Image (cartoon, rainbow, N blue to C red; front, side, top):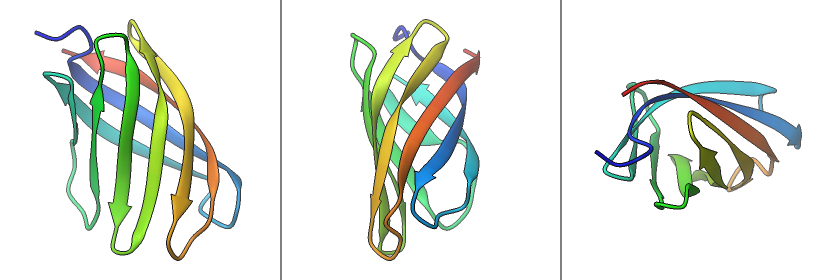
Length: 99
């Protein structure tokens, strides 16, 4: 099992732009790959490096948010920026809920 595998709860907070103030997502990390744990009309994908570095995206239609950051143990944090219809940005933090 990869070091960061498991179920994560991630909160995405908007600091700039007119996007909703905050979102919460459930994601799964498996073998370093990031997957969305729920359903809906958007996708979450990305990768966690063995160092904990995170790079991913949240896509809904033509809107895209690019996510970067780092995981350390059971916690993570970083930043995001969006493109498309909405131009927003902010920070995210996450906590591992289980493996």
